[in-house]
Image (cartoon, rainbow, N blue to C red):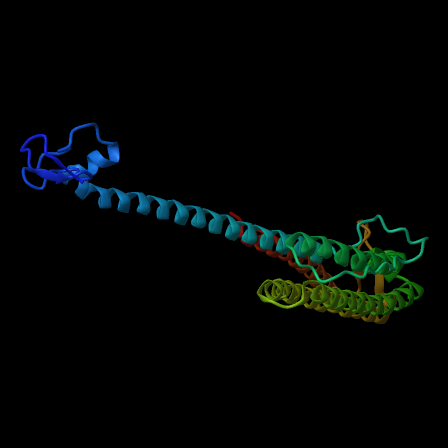
Length: 315
């Protein structure tokens, strides 16, 4: 069926929006829909694909933005989770073998060893680290507290006092105390090594394999290596102190008949050369004690530097 254009009166199809003869919009009259009006207008008709492309671009950009935001949030959470685990492990490593005065030596040695499943979430990793380091630490701190109590009983602070050095019995007792002290130092170190191996074994079973697990165990090993260097330096220092103290005993035992006390309570040697040798050895021992304090300060600084490094990871 055909109708006439309302302008040129020539025949057109009933569905035409524009007269094919004169080009007038809506040749059959009436009111077009918005979409029909757009299609009837050449300029707007050309804008339709442009607008469609703009809308599509906005939709794609919005989707990409959401994906990027989610990716950044996921990455930051993973970084923070890793930093939290590293910090917890570092702090627990520092106190693994250090008694804090709460050990009840009258009671039995702690023996808890919770069987932990493989950790599959960051929260499970942190909880597992806390459990392992607490249980291993409770045992090692208990044993280290026993060692410290035995060392305290030796009264090492009196070893170089004049009343100890003036009598043969005093230096003999001090020599025996030094020998026991050296044995206790070795025993303390063996306790430390055993606790570190136990913690490493249990941590590896907790975290399993994978990049995150390897990173955590690498951090544990790195902390352990640095701590071992400090322990070696402290052990060398203490052995040197023991050796130097033994040489003081050798000297005073040899000069016993020619030693006296001055008004200040200090030893005085009849042989000036022996007196100078004694003063040098006492100064050397004081220097070793100062060096020991410096090692402890360096240990604290190293720990703080590691904590600062972990803090930079967080976002």
